[in-house]
Length: 418
Ligand code: NAD
Image (cartoon, rainbow, N blue to C red; front, side, top):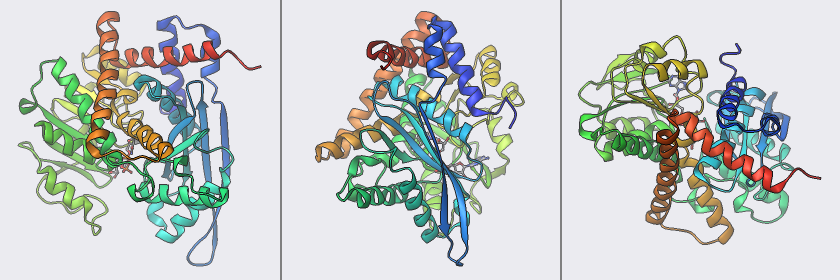
């Protein structure tokens, strides 16, 4: 992996820029540039054919100055420790940016889940959970879904942890099915948040939904609910994409139809969807539109394509989709980037509500969840917007100012043990 696309190097560069611009003292930078705990485990799995395969698993706690670690688990063929370290650091900033009482963590297993049966995935999830059982828990580090994991995996994880502890521990992870301690609204929360933050940005910049178009890269959990919520606000979604390529309709896709298509268990991707023009993922990113929402994976907007983007604003649904060099190019071109640590924080915020409800054993209705979610996201957007205006900095820099300042303050107030 080149230095340019190494996510941890990029995360460090972003931290460096923020600390320099804020005049944060070097001790704090040094402290924050080192994850607190990095665990790597071997995950042996008996495959359906009787053979044994061993997968690599990772769990990183970046920092817990503001509370227990919080962050998802991803299953992907190229996951490695540097990626997980970067994602864990971004979680620290995200939780601090929206002001929820968590530190940052992340995990992953290096596996292509499409090549495993459901039974193999269950054994993998349970063994991975067992192997990291001493570093996770409702008071220490709380996993959640991420790429290629969802409520099913969180159910297995909660069950495995509970079996080991000898009693039900709902709060060990979030994103669980609602029947076993999950929160209403969690599935939709990240995409809902991306669209909510995009809409707040649009309001501040005089963009009207009915005159604005949205392009969404990635049509998984985040992309789908970004599209559905944006449609509810009145925006026109003109293109979406997934691993099978891009789907473009200049006068607006039928979002409900495309959502129904992907939700059909017979279609695991958008392949075969016919009511749109086929384009490549590269072409999709360069379409003329008002809002571009990359909702797939890291390093999608790079120095190679940043000069060719034709959107007014990038709203980052994925984690780390824009490299620091591309960020600079976009800033010079006057294209704002609303950063991941603000734009996709709806998911972790709703996870926080799930954890709170699990600990109280008292569950909220959907209206309450959405009301509390919008309240927190609006407050976070306003905190960032205020700094953008006062300090004349980019949205990313402003969000880092808010977040790093809160974490640095917590470290300072707690002091360094012993
Ligand atoms: P997902 O697995 O549900 O969906 C990923 C989507 O991206 C799929 O549609 C996949 O086909 C597509 N994709 C993969 N490679 C692609 C490529 N090269 N070009 C175009 N599309 C491609 O994952 P998700 O949960 O939606 O997560 C997506 C991103 O959002 C990740 O960066 C994740 O870390 C971030 N995120 C997720 C959550 C959450 O709650 N799920 C919360 C915050 C951030």
